[in-house]
Length: 144
Image 1 (cartoon, one colour):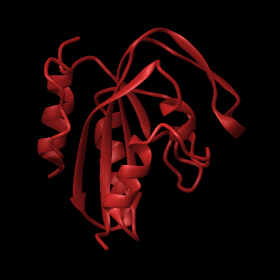
Image 2 (cartoon, rainbow, N blue to C red):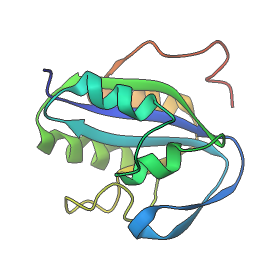
Image 3 (tube, rainbow, N blue to C red):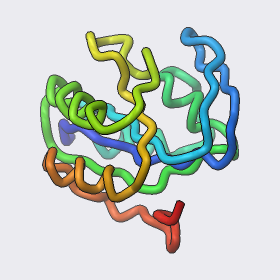
Image 4 (tube, helix red, strand yellow):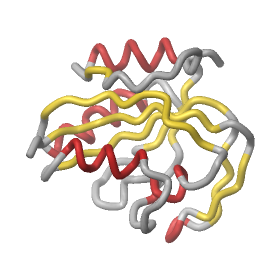
């Protein structure tokens, strides 16, 4: 089992209001988002779970990915310990808009979900943090 951290590049197709469990209703503006997470007992299984539409909602990200309004464009990942998840989130947060409280209930970060202006910015951040693309890009998915 691989221990690691990952970033989901997510496109929200339309402006939408979502009930995010304990966070309550949140408004999301159409565009590109990045979600940072970690898996200390099976990185591959965690990512596979996120990509499934049918699942029990447990994490904030489960609520966001449920439905037809979102699409995972790419999965970036690397081996690493849980504490590195927050370092990657901090790096992304410096060049994006934080969605307060999202995905960070088990740490002191402001957020683990970010709205970005461009895919190029995300790619640069992923390179800087040593993350690798997982090869899940569909043709034309990076065009915004």
